[in-house]
Length: 196
Picture 1: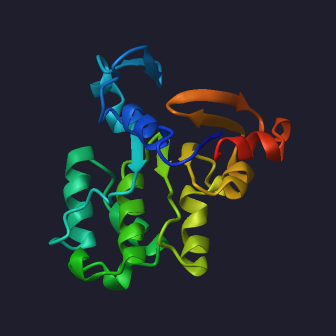
Picture 2: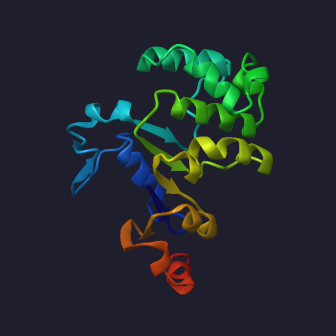
Picture 3: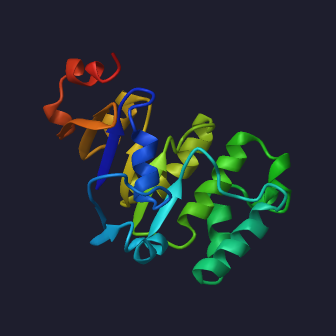
């Protein structure tokens, strides 16, 4: 199941993901995620979600392997899970180089490994294919794309790809829901109005 969130710059897409990730507290209203009320029960969902945002949430002076080892200890992941993910994203050969020396695309692959390491129930993805060339996108698609079978909240600036990935679409305008619909229920004009 994928919820794609669409809207222009400043519409609130990233803010919504940060609320769901328990990185921000709501100023008003209620947020329920995985059956828990946020922020009061945020502790009960943090280990059940994987966040892939604009920032990789990795230590750049450490290697990809060292970062994943640290996150493995935090989440008590299965032995070998980090090596399995590094192999899956094609990063095994570069896994022992400091992240500060890697390209943005390789850094994004390491961030994908971090987000998936603890096998989360829900993936929160903010422009997950950013900085990835077509070959890298093809490599990570089975892990975070539609074919992964994961439950996802996907933020994208590309309406066409977001609609192709979506089961449900949330359109945001200035922090408010303009619509919630299935992709087949949306006209091109309805989507285009989000960006005017």
